[in-house]
Length: 291
Image (cartoon, rainbow, N blue to C red; front, side, top):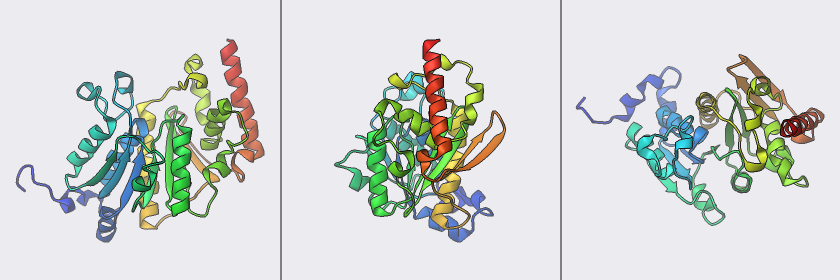
């Protein structure tokens, strides 16, 4: 092959075996929307591009900064100050120059959510942990359109993955944020994402955690695990093969402890075990603040 030439079939031929040729062609025609292209979202995009997905809608309103270097795929000295959505689209096109990409540099807003989800087969959530209004907006819009959602979140040195499937519980059904103080939403969100809280055992510098100023630690190790987990769920959903469990099922794998825990919590954060976990996290945060 001539240097610099691109051929889709050869570029993704090593996927075959785990995929059939027909399945690879199917993925080439799929469109995935990703909102948030930082820690997890940026790696999601590159992983899915290497899987051979052919079309993306990408949304992010932020720019790369030095504080992103430890975990974000597009962060480097050459990208400081550049829009994340432009940098990540460029990196994805370097993998597959034939990609069909639409970018949304205002992030996802009420005025553009219809365009963001137009023709989309799957939404992959890469939004920042604390972005509740935008997340609820997209989840409600996906639910109204019957678009499945996969969400893998970095936690410690592991990740948790959840799927919100058409006909299953909604975001609000599961996380139960309505009617609770907004300052407690990050705790309820955490417990809903990973009811087992595996990562709590090795937090060695807890004073860095401060939900009131939206500060939590995150590692590139966890973001890489997120991409593999979300990419696998995406493959199964898009091809319609393999078991796909939606909430109230969730799964957390922690590479540090070497443990995988699958949970089933009907009612989400109404479940008694989740309510106990919410109480535990609130108690621990108050203890650390006093210390």
